[in-house]
View 1 (tube, rainbow, N blue to C red):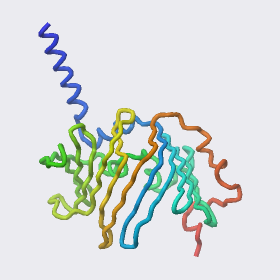
View 2: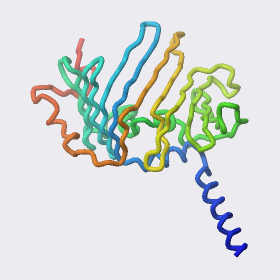
View 3: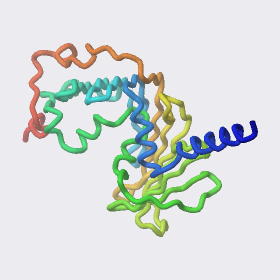
View 4: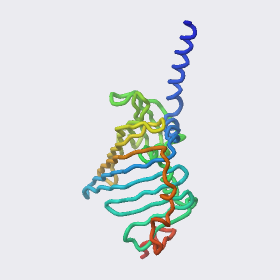
Length: 251
């Protein structure tokens, strides 16, 4: 009886340990992979020297290159991708933009893979790089240092393995911080932890900027109507779609 109990405790320990084993970036991304669909509302506030701008959008996302994002404020813009092609139109613009997904620029193609509410925009850029565990600080249980091509990133994780922040520095000496991202209000979604509040502080061209993202009405892995990804149902048939943003407002 004692042997069985000891074996059970040992197996339990190994299972818990394996949940946090391996590179942290890969672990976080693999957890996000469990999310198949997302519907949510995103409120974004950007602050800089020129003032403050608030954005509001409603997003429907499905794995495989499907998205329907309706920008409500300050500019009405609709983006739809049906797994094969992407369509985008700003209300009042003379033309829209459209291209097959396979011919999109790398940043636009990657954007279709980003699961709304997650930190994938940064993690995908750090995937496959060497990780080094750093001494923990009071505000985090674990710190992971990663040397990227043009900066040095530090992941901050709590005792549950949740990503609570990413700091970027010019170099590994961490003397000059260029950007900091804080993730709060995590919710569990399909076995992954998704932060519903993102706060960023960064510098660009000598100016300081702040950005706050709040994700509301967040629902994962519920069926999303296929009709939401049929572009012809939402765009006026008279809109002329071109394959280059420069053609929308020609000189």
